[in-house]
Image (cartoon, rainbow, N blue to C red; front, top):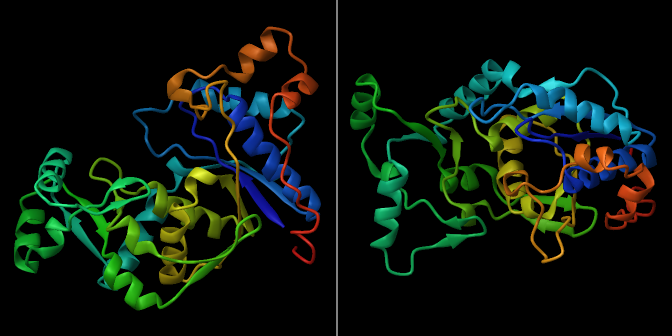
Length: 288
């Protein structure tokens, strides 16, 4: 069993991060396996260098030691570019020249515009333009991202499923997320493309993460199939929320582990603030 904790060094760890790391480590321990650390740091505009060490210090203070050298996504941009090239060669991605404003304006003009779990679905504007126009715009260095042609990808994959240890076997329905971005115009990759590539590279056999990312797994299974990556198991756990029921988030200045430590909180006291860990013993029976 190989699991990973993959924080972004854009802010200090809070209780939600601590819970996610604990779940990943607990799963690795149940499977007599390996717990890895990965820094999801592709968005260099938001990364703060001091948080790499602070995250490691928080994990060590929590007693969560990782094996192997931590991976940094910022070191792997060429790997992601190669994965995107493989999808381009299959004719499964296309350049998108739309700005966010243009997309919002077009969606506003569509009656009953389709919505997915993450909000309005991209209306497919640039999917409809000709190959010649795409080539011309790229030659003119028009800023563009790269999107997955979800309809073509679904046809290439057939019916896929994924197994979640808490939610069972789930049929893949990537179309409900629309033509997601696989490479941003300012960064030559995206969360979706980077995470499936990294999981394959690190030989992750169980992906543990918050249930807010359950819908993203539909896209990830499609990408795994198209790129020939192995299929891991999944465990999408509950989220840690504040007193008002809102999910803890770094951008909302959720109280950090570092500040809790500085105020005198012990590891035991922090554990008492977290939800119970998922019951893994039965779910992981026979898994390695």
